[in-house]
Image 1 (tube, helix red, strand yellow):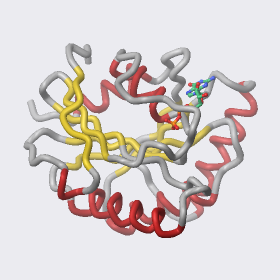
Image 2 (image 1 turned 90 degrees about the horizontal axis):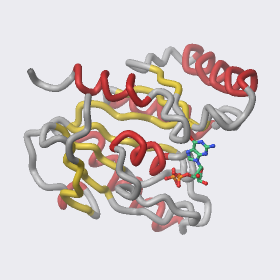
Image 3 (image 1 turned 180 degrees about the vertical axis):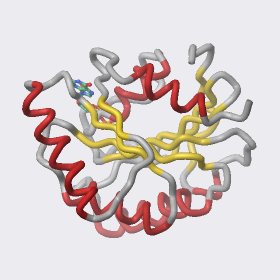
Image 4 (image 1 turned 45 degrees about the vertical axis):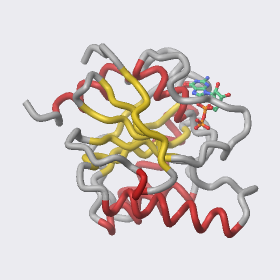
Length: 197
Ligand code: GDP
């Protein structure tokens, strides 16, 4: 898929503020610092569409970007930011889970997992929760350029094994790098395949 246009349509506090739309939505989520903003910018070829920031957990809004006037890329707040107060974390979880479980045109969740760190319990629990709720999801390993190939293969392999052990079956698993653009073509092609003809 060639990206012709990508623009911010709305920055919503929660599901209620998300504008109604017929366009299929693909929602990107992951732990803070997983590389979500970088990947979104790489996918859309917009340097600053999603704001990469050195302060993890800063983006707390649901940002909806219309791409090629044919689908919506949804940037969900990062989870697992320890410094967020319990109250804020609860509010955030409620808003994000309402979006994920009630948004009618949500087509797929892209769960981002850092390939450079050991598998994290939080990522696995999140995948379990998605599957239990019947939300279609795929896994995207990020930052594959960063470490050695064996380290990347090791971490991603361990995470895949854990998914399997819990009977979890993501629709797709991608290896990606915002830096080298690895996986970009495959992710976009797969999104394109799911758009109405
Ligand atoms: P977010 O908090 O999930 O949106 O993460 P960011 O996109 O802001 O990235 C967090 C940090 O990881 C930043 O320092 C990025 O430069 C770095 N990063 C993100 N993606 C990649 C990647 O593909 N390769 C490498 N080497 N670094 C990355």
